[in-house]
Structure formats: C-alpha cells, structure tokens
Length: 64
Ligand SMILES: [Zn+2]
Image (cartoon, helix red, strand yellow):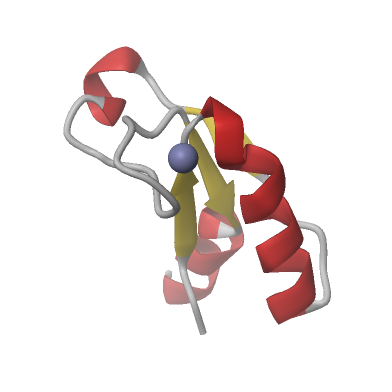
C-alpha cells in the first residue's frame, strides 16, 4: 500500500486522481509547511512539493 504522494501546486489534482484510482477512497491532503517542503520534490515533476496527499493520519493510528 502506498503511503503518501507529494506534489507541487500544478500536479495536486493529478495526485488526488492517482490516489482515488489506486485506493478507491478519497485521500486527505494538506499543504506542507515551508520548511517541510524545502527538501521534498513533486512526484510528477522536479518542482518543490507543496502538497501531501495520502492517509497518513489513519496509517499512524493503526500502528499505535
Ligand atoms: Zn509537479
């Protein structure tokens, strides 16, 4: 199971589509903090990631 998809402003819709297609559910997505996004690149291009798409919250809930 994939964890999260990072994307830039331009590709966030594509990331959401990919998630819905792959998982069959609608993901949570949130804007990254400036510091967090500084070293993360978009999964679709070379730009800096602005958004994180995925169900990371429910994932950590299961691990507890
Ligand atoms: Zn991109």
